Image (cartoon, rainbow, N blue to C red):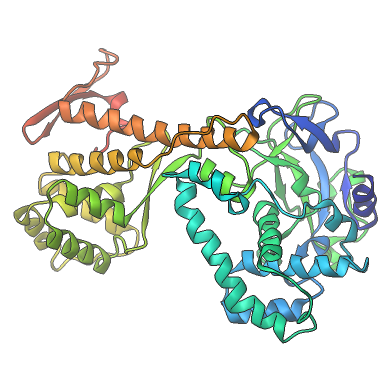
Length: 471
């Protein structure tokens, strides 16, 4: 860590050493009492304080790496937007340069792990089986297959035509570099793009309740004198600053936020999970909707024709996904597609007929479709509820038993599975109450309303309406 700090100081980075301590060993009971490196507050820190400065020119990016030409060739081969593959390739090559001690990021590269062992793409097969049924398993097959295609179809041919033809690089080397990029890369700014950001990646992530964010500051006069760079932005330099958005107490670990990320994303890309994660969700693809409708007795030809209608009218495609989120109802789009699949020919005919001659645009389409469905009797349809319930039941049956191992990876499996099952079970309970017409009275002083659901009559309060599937 001392070598890294010396490298940071000599390359224009700054941090308030009175306020924060970089590279501390911190513990977390959620992480099975294992230690990790993080950032601690050395004193109480108020909201708005600037505690670090990062020169964007010292971030490792595709445009700033030593092998811009080879990375550019890969971008031409892959196409635009494939930042994970491009930056993973750049890191793979930069590490080879550092083996000769000539990389400008030498101390930083030596600080980085060889691979982010916690990410699921690097798990052995005997561990991956415990991910059965989870969003991670669904993404994992695609992720490793994608990396393999990147390597065999694009990267290997480029290496074979370069000075690295005899380098001995392997797919596992690339996968390791890719895992590091997956867990540490940030979008720096639109002009610079995605990159590895020294110092910023010392802050660990928390979904909700984080302390710091990266920001740019145009008016350098508002900075404390110690934070002002020697080369002004007016002279062409570019900087990011670490600002407190939540106060911190002395000796408290400071967390950054990588975004509103659920546990499946955290485990896949960063190698850990977070209890009570407000960003958690469970993902369903179109095949899950199709299978649930079929198991509820909807004719297969009807399902196929209705999905074609959905695709033609911009509701979903074969590779579309739908998400159930913690403590939230299913999305309107999911409910609309389920209703379309399950609706009788007369109901669907009335609905589709009502759309003729009407112009539907952009994101307003869903709202317009929903409005027409309400005119056709609304979503309060037993068949729709049954298809949704069947979809949840099928998903719940896919989960494996959690490991009895007391290691860190097993703990993360437990957190992930418990969270996803909790989302599914909460929705199932709600649907059971909906189908049985049982709603608790809640606050008797609140206005009540009666909803007709075919032959089912349900009573709900305004507080319950916030979690109504169909209001």
